[in-house]
Image (cartoon, rainbow, N blue to C red; front, side):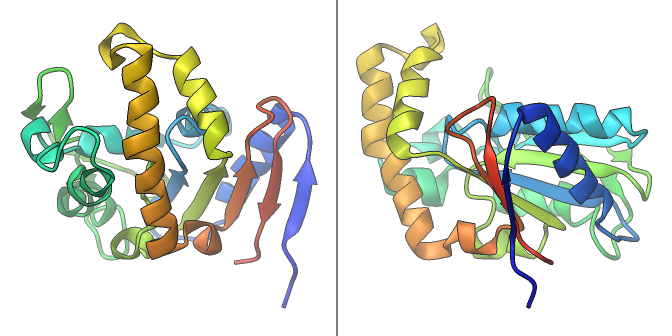
Length: 230
């Protein structure tokens, strides 16, 4: 069995290596890339950078996020605003994610997809017109809980962004916006909802064990990584 390749270096070099890993995936359908990890780990930034690199190589990229596959707030918070169980079990419409995006882009799919089903600003459902992806497109999808069992086999490359939980709290405080509430609200959200939900996820799904690439993203400009043979 081949051992995992490990490294550390400048962020730009890592993004280049990651785009090469995407290019190495042999597939007759669009390559579906998951960028998973805790809130404030740096998933969105990493996914955006990867999308730019892939487009620079001439690939068509579908950029989507799990935040556009949330369920309405009343359902999301039915166990309470700070419930970890609610965050893990109730927050996302995984059936819709598979039905309108992951399965159409997967084996046997017709490649007609929708990139979203929910508008968080208005708390309403969306039904954008279906688009057709070319067979050599790449879906770069970021979000939490992407490597849970019911989604695991729907990804062609699985990236897990690892950051200590305490570091995510620090980042959440720094990036707090008016819509996120007070600093105390942000702190409580992380301590009572998001971190315990991630602990549930780690115990139930062991996401890092299923990742093809683990990014240790505590040092943003010099991440370290582990690439496992597929």
